[in-house]
Image (cartoon, rainbow, N blue to C red):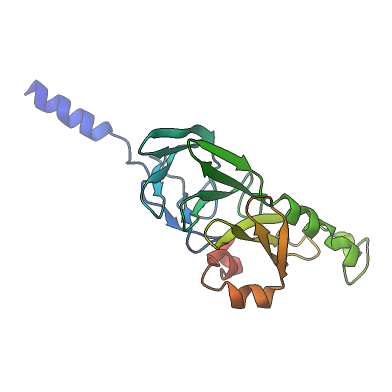
Length: 233
């Protein structure tokens, strides 16, 4: 009787299970989104996170445990306990030689950035692959149609950068630069696409929104089709 009571007590006090299944990417349709929703507060995975994102060839796996990221293959750990934000998604390259993490240090509005993890033998090289795109998009104020400084007290805010797709295996990466989508930003919601050399971050091509949507429609995630009501206040 005592043993039965202890079993019931343990079962009754057990916490909720962790989040183990990733959602479809918000920046990249083929990415694994690592959070239940678009905000870092609600909904919150009460049981924490224990998500595995396996490479296309099945040989490697990105392990998300709470706010730590590790990379493992058949030979063991390649990367241990790197930091990862709540709002984040993982996008593997089709050839399994690299993956990127798009993550926010704030909320849905920003600031979003991209880190590339490139596997070479038993080592992993990390880089902020979107820096050149960030710098170029940040200069858009010099060509702002209404002049500079902008009227009405609004500002040209720092862009978000997110990865949306790989090209030619892991050789090239398509990223989107986005002006934060809130009213204090003069060109809120403006986006431009960039094709990057995935080893250096050098800009190979630029895409206006129409061309980006036409050429990479199958890569673009729900962030680019969500209604304003679905976005974080």
